Image (cartoon, rainbow, N blue to C red; front, top):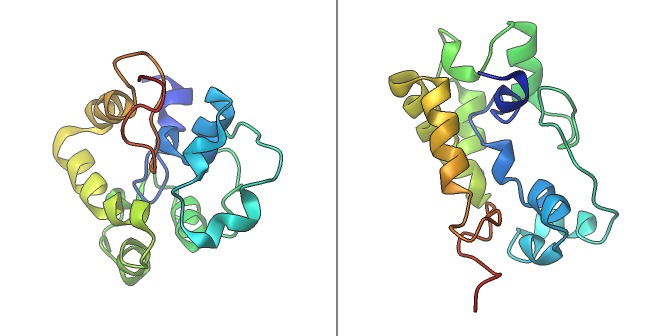
Length: 144
């Protein structure tokens, strides 16, 4: 597995390659931001920048999951003996749609391995036309 691919696995189990902000930057298309929760409205008009993922940057803001996993030197929360803890349970049920996937993603990684999960996620967020999909754009916006 390449380091830049591993960087797409957030500590919480989300796939950073599906991040609407990241994909909007890569595809140069703000439509990926339209379906995002109101919580993110203040960021929807700022200059888009590429993000390497939360392993490298903390663009998502102060994250207690990231902090905990880094302190414990974990690749992701599923390596923790306390998984699933209150922190990850609260995150996955906080009402933010894309957060709902985190625990299931982690269980999938535990069962099938990181490489398999990353490959599945890459395919999930890739349209057959070659353009990228995102957390809030799950069907192609480029095909008629």
